[in-house]
Image (cartoon, rainbow, N blue to C red; front, side):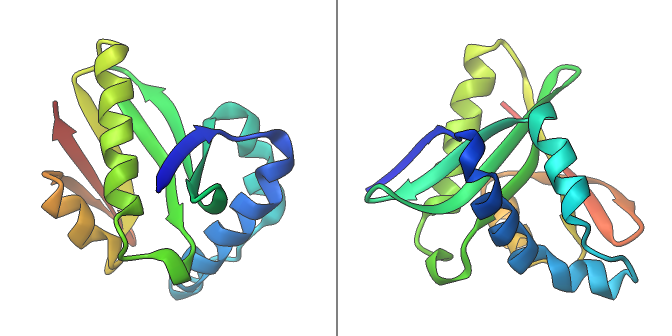
Length: 141
């Protein structure tokens, strides 16, 4: 069973590890270096959630407000748990939060070529703009 709960401060290192494992190849392709200090500094500025499968952490969800939208800063599922519905569950969770807060849209960025783009498109996100190495997506609620 998948659940999403507020992340505790001590879960920062798990969140960073999963994020780095999933994103480092995109950073490298763009000639960028993964900097743990940047991730750690951004942690307090986001609303952080742990994604659990049978009470075991398998991912992280990080959110922040963005005008009339809720912005997904990070949605990371550990490699061995991808393709099992956790990402779709997390997107539905974000929709519920946005509606509860009176927000009309959900936005996110994805690295160009990311396999996650298929998930976002299936969930109704449409590409708003291309950026160097990334794409901005949005879904109206």
